[in-house]
Amino acid sequence: MALSGKSLKALKILQWVAAFNGKKEEGEKLSLEELQLNLQKETSLAKAKYSAADLFRTPFLRRVTFCVSLAWFATGFSYYSLAMGVEEFGVNLYLLQIIFGGIDIPAKFITFLSMSYLGRHTTEVTILLLAGGSILALILVPSDSQTLRIVLAVFGKGCLSGSFSCLYLYTSELYPTVIRQTGMGMANVLTRAGSMMAPLVKITGDVRPFIPNLIFGTIALLGSSASFFLPETLNQPLPETIEDLEKWSPRAKEPKQEPEAEKDSQRIPLQTCGPDPGPS
Image 1 (cartoon, one colour):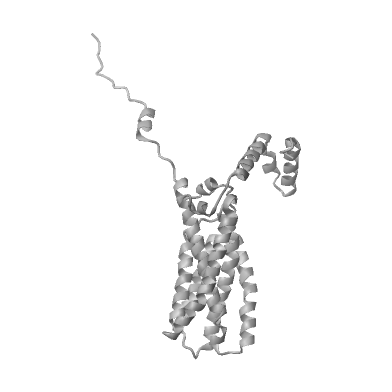
Image 2 (cartoon, one colour):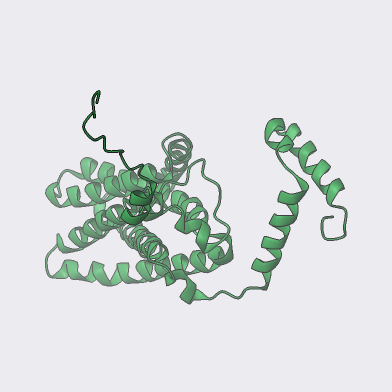
């Protein structure tokens, strides 16, 4: 409507939608000038061209890309290590498949609650940390303690399943609109790369049985460490441009210090008082 010259009608519809969603005060703050400014911004964004190279344009965006990529790789890499190791536990294979598949339902539900109340950042760091810890704990559990080994493996797979759910939402909220699909595409490529490398690492078990779990658990912990350096996106507006994302960087949040020359110019010089001349 705004494009066809019906800006006033578009403004009234937006205010009605805001009131319908219980945001009447926010809707009343909208103005024609703000609506036209946003329209011009969206038009300029639509004309701009972006590529995969833009994922590394700024320092903060490079950090987000590196940390998100490592988290995705670690999740896919460790998830398929547990999914392919069902036969190692020496119990009924069909029963284990049901248990390994069924754990995804409560895991995703708990992850959803955690993301809604604790935030995406805390959820992702915690579940990858727990997943890596459970995989490493398998090294310490003797092979005759099958029940404990199954519990640890199922718990780790549930955490990694929750990590997938969290990362899909977290990644889409981290990347600005102009490169969001590009970022999601790169993340999925790295996940598939991790899942393809998992069977190759399994082969190292022929050298030492503990090596695969050591590698899988360590990578999961590295993914958790990388997620620690990502910002929280809960209750934050989605970034539209790369400049919007840069506002989330710690450097942008630091208070700007005034130059010393400007401070000196704002100082009021003190008047020096001479000795009192007294009565002549």
